[in-house]
Image 1: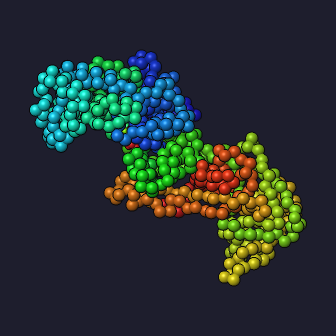
Image 2: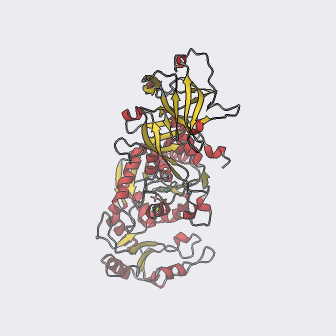
Image 3: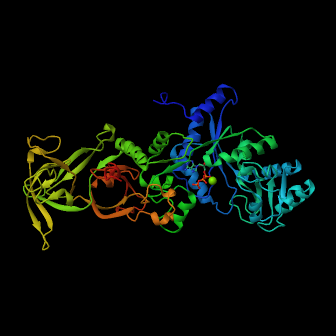
Length: 552
Ligand code: ATP
Ligand code: MG
């Protein structure tokens, strides 16, 4: 199957580089900034970087791109490590851009000595004004002609904390008239009196992304440095630094970032959702984060399958979240344990059932997987079914329970409704039925054709559970494409809580990591909020794509 798939453009590049002897082996890296939790877009980058290395016998580094001390935190570092491992990948080496701060400083000094970098006195606003526009060249700063000695002195004093934040920067001397705005004397260092999560207060100047990233790649001998399309215009600068410093020739390649319908994918926005409590945290099951998807019940296999299906494009696109849902259904259909849970219970009394009798009916955990074994489902004279599985006066094509209708109870017997009991408002509170003694599942000799099969629980054995039904976090398909504040587009119905649902007792014997198919309901997993016997379930996904069906 793998063989039949055409190579994507990155695989083509790598196989050519290896065939031509440009590299003996390849080394990629995944370079997260530890300023938030990883999301499904990062999963695409992880699958790509680790997948490419794996396929061509190379390796992948994990590098924390921690050049911005203000937003970074070790909580994020730990979660990132954990998420990558959970996805099924392992890195050979773990580095931090901050490991290279001394080396990067030395590179900067080297560029100053070569007359290729200078200390700028202008404010950020003045620098922006001098930058020109894409159609108009920029103007040279008066600082551009500073002597090497003066630049060395000023840069050292920047490092020593002699200047205020924002008062000076170090710039590369490239070309203020370049049609590529990135090359118009880009910033290399800025002053920040901020505590860094790893280097503490050692530094008050920090390298910019453009000065840190390529050099870090080169230091590690990364062969293929893969990033998203918005960095295309940075590539000439990436190459310029490497050439001027005469470093290992790492090469940057760009691919289209993943955008997904009905969600947002920027860490800044996700952080806002967390901080403003629109969600319960980074791992809220509605979040597109890896931790949210995991808590929702997604498997690593399903996420890898998704990343494989979307492939690697060189043009931005918007992927339908139903493809992700398709992948988890595919996986869970093969692995989830089948169970019965009644969300809105209606009592059914079987009037001809022998008093006190309980049948324990052996039933398959998963008909798709023989190795999944069986469980015992109790059947007795008082059971609960779903309220909307009963109609007192059913229309002719009604396949559920109605007066005079036969239905099969899964892992049970065929029953027929005879009469109802109502409260003062006229609501049905109890249905009285008779059962067919010869119709037990697996040994049915009754000859009766039941129209439908319902799920149920035995009243005396049922355990109360809470179910959290999740829906899309946003109301609109392409959140990023609207001008509205994204928070006004949140789906107010993204969470529905079903209290006092009733579940079959087999759950009490299950592993806490189990994933389930609740018969006729969807796929579910146990939530970490569960305490003791009060089981709380998250709906991972419905059984079918309800949105497509509803014409959404
Ligand atoms: P965000 O915009 O969500 O904050 P980022 O690009 O700033 O993302 P990083 O931590 O810098 O986040 O990203 C680490 C790696 O993951 C980078 O190589 C980046 O290109 C890649 N990446 C981030 N978002 C996506 C995405 N939506 N699709 C594919 N790759 C992504
Ligand atoms: Mg980034």
